[in-house]
Image: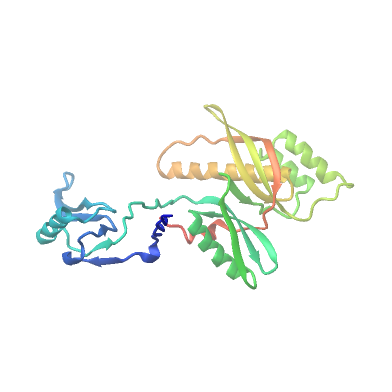
Amino acid sequence: MAKTKKKTIITRKDEVRIQTLDTTKMLNMYIAEKVVKTWKEDFIDQDNGEVVTVERSEPLYVKGTLINQDVLAKIKFDIASGDIKEPIWITNQNREGYEYKNTFMQPWLAKAEVGDKNVKFLLYAQGVDNAMEILRDYIELNYKGGFVITEVKEFDDCVILEDTLSDRMSEDDISIAYLRGEIDLDAYVTATRNATNENAAPSKDKKYYQLEFKIKSQDTDGEYESTGTFVVNTFDTERAMVVVKAYLKMQDEQRAETAKKEGREHKAKTFSLLIEKAAPIPVGCFIPLEFSQVYAEQ
């Protein structure tokens, strides 16, 4: 019976990767990083007549190109002509894939075994590697003992908000929020009932609530409708509505300020919210956005 030939497994552990201009080492190797020709051109600025220098570039060889005899001859010519000035990266493996860099901060959910406890984290990150880096830093700073990160996955597209209002809303707080337009009539009635019901002991602990809203905004031009998903760390869904309403109002005020600086008109909006879905989610800790932004790649 003929023996089946064992398939050779190739990984980065076996890769031979060097940076060189020595063409005697390049034959039958592969281009490991894109090779680019760069040069500078001078232009006359038509407005002020000044000479402006612009750097231009042109790709010569893409990643994964096999350096056969023909390609090697071209590389020799490019080196001799000065089109290739810096040593180029070559490898013995054909690696044509490349990773896209995500520059957007998105919500991620992670789990970690910290000591003898399982902790769920909610955070903003630009990807799995970025999330892992943020998690390691934050856990080392805020927890004691050993830890293992057991899960990192992308979370729903949402805005994460922390309730920074006073401890519990009194009946007066609710009335003020209603008069300011921060909550609608239904939320006002429900929140007032909860605040004045002596038999219903209010929760002393905040929870993370995931809420889907139908958002109606109105300005002098008309009314607009959209949807939005929020995660709010607060006491109950009524209070979450107040937090989201305050956030939307703050965002609109910031847009108004930006428009004023740029000399544009901004029509202030009023907002009303309708909760379509609401449920607590098992999150133990939200890593502040400001912490994650330190690790953001531009």
